[in-house]
Image 1 (cartoon, rainbow, N blue to C red):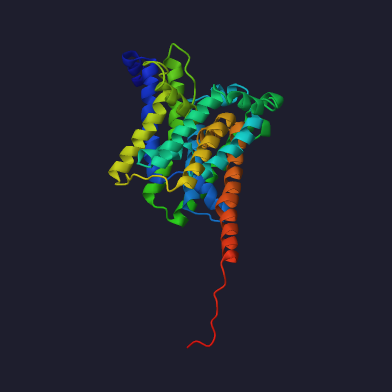
Image 2 (cartoon, one colour):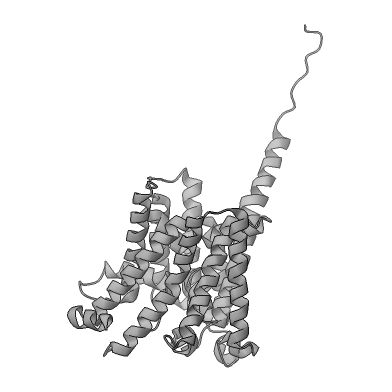
Length: 371
């Protein structure tokens, strides 16, 4: 009833934008406080640590899936109507795009959602990287990079295997999946308790994960009251970042929907959380090498996210919450790409450079007969 009143008063598109803004603000605030970051979790895991960063990501991941399954069980959401299950998806794009996104995520020191949260608290490195990410994502969708994206996405799609529903393809029941996810949530809470990440960070991680089913519920509810078709969706940052960029380049009043409200909402929520917690701080690049690394990583994420059909949140959490096969392939590939890049760029090459400098250093001379 409340959504119908809003839609009657402000219009369906503006109601969608408002909903995207509110849910985005909640996500931004909780993400800023919990330090939710897939890159941090992947790097921690790749270095043999089972710590707090991984615990936070697991809480978000398992909460999102649990909440989405509960919505489905209550009839408040129909997963098969989501784009990820209702239309063909690219398996080759998911694998290749996920690897590129994971590589870029480590180079830029944060995924697309993390860059947005950091930029809201004054990180100018993240702000510039986020702009590059959005530009490359738009170029990959409709610009000069779109033929490359299509060439990589077309070889293998879910049409070749008949479905993108992981539960259907695997023969697993929703009950079995629900039990597995519940056990995962309990395990993630136990890990958080063991690593002493704190009550507030744990609650904030729950809040981040809960934003996924909240967005599913909101867009599903809008489909039942809107006269015009409304896309059933949840949180993602590749397409919405590109759409938000184009909003500033388009005539006023165009492109008003859930996605366009999401990105500004996350920024505002993260800014307010950082303001009230005293964590706003201007940070810039430290030399040209760092700048090249960040911008290269952002570009890889922009292209990889659009190729894969989602980012670390859009595919790695949102798509995974409805058991879309391509989303799980993307998530697995992101982890592989991130861990391989961390090993090669941040550990292997620095160690080799340090050994080379040590060998090149002249041996200290020994002067005899001097007292």
